[in-house]
Length: 84
Image (cartoon, rainbow, N blue to C red; front, side, top):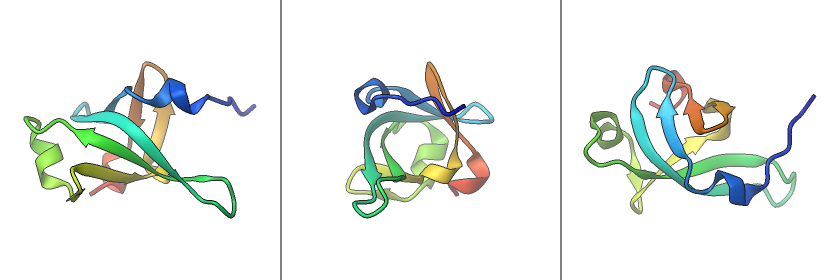
């Protein structure tokens, strides 16, 4: 069963990798106008975190493909292999 989440509930959630690295906070999502599916999540990076500094930061944001998202609850958990 698919669980639907309102986008307002996602904004501000902490984004971490599946091995525990803090990437930052979710600030927005990129959604396809044609399909209505989420393509990417946009994260405001935690700059004191080592991993966030290694990732490609575009305009002050980290762009993470939606297929890297493993789970959403209190945190957004992403697969580290799919973001580097």
